[in-house]
Length: 305
Ligand code: FUB
Image (tube, rainbow, N blue to C red; front, side):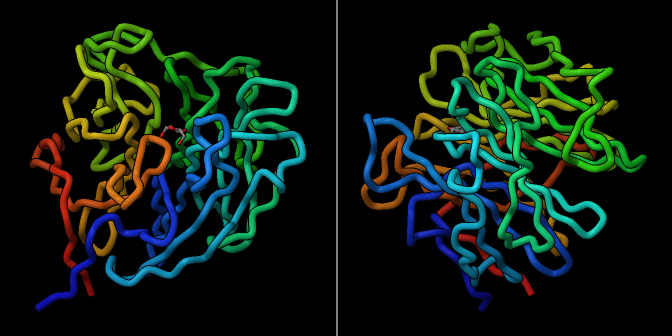
């Protein structure tokens, strides 16, 4: 019988906002970290963590790989990150609260997927508003890298090859927030799109998976949209995961050793709450034409070779 791993996969601390990255035969999982003790009864998050596995059952804890202490210009809200590799270096994109107010996107660089990451020294994206959170990064086959982000609006920049600057002539592009693209919902734009985008390509179809607010629903579900171009127009695809007990959810998708996985978070660990979340994973399959049926939260996952 194959070994199994029960959900939540990380039990030692509260973790959220899972972001997988596959390097060779290893899947690295970057997460945020909900502190046990809350300040002002709000998200209390000061560092980013990394875990890795070769079989989806046994996980190595790499500890703190980047933290607010490493970012001189930031003072709070170590929120949902994503990592990517380019030319042998690893880039970790992270939303943070700036010392002089507002949210911005930081980038840490490392020679090693498990860090430690070194801050650029200044924000990568800083529009001076609160929309600059939850970056998702993808390098297309032609070498162009895209950094999407945002709550309540989905926006993107074209990253330069150095991955630590973007094309200022194009600037920050705002995606039209339409019902055709993101479904009719209850978030500020009138669509379901909320936050936590996850951008990738499979079989020449681009996917945008995100936390979404359905009509008449308080908690976030996961939804997805697709496009035949990396910059849209996006077409709403449907619900990827139903809302649960936790106010937030956050998708992270990876193909690993011929299996497709959706990482998400819940409040399932003992003592769990909207500010004490825990990362889980479910396996799923794509339909032949690329659509994805709603994925059920699951109790446990079978290991792989
Ligand atoms: O974890 C803090 C914030 O809550 C993230 O940035 C959002 O995606 C939501 O999960």
